[in-house]
Length: 206
Image (cartoon, rainbow, N blue to C red; front, side, top):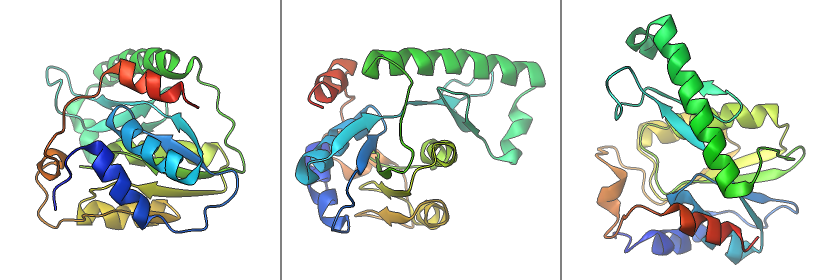
């Protein structure tokens, strides 16, 4: 089965999430596509929807090759083996640039970077996971937020990444966990980019 679009994927993903849902659970979506799926989950279970924004860390001159991820507060995930792609100065420059970009986008989506997640149960949602870099950095950040539990839900998670996520989250929910993974988009008939305006309109409902 291919998903016709992200709404279809979200409606199918809902079925994989264990119930009952704990009181005070928050759906935390990764923009932009994750917001559409997060919205389906939040509506189905009558939960609050919020977002957390990350950016890829890319080596100099290679803006598509992400070797790590960074959040608004400077939390970083980058495997030790990827440090060789940077000099100390180029890494500091990339961190500074991407931190500003993340903070600006977060302000655009939710107005501020203040979170109150202590003691909360989290369902972290994305529209598909490839390397896991984005969700790994969120996992590190959530530790500092003193959340209660954190489940991660995504329609597509490669099998090798699925195993790693099991070590970082209280539960992992997925529909497809392929051994031979190529790209997230191969599981969607329509995987068009989601405009910022769609994200903001969706969040305005919460």
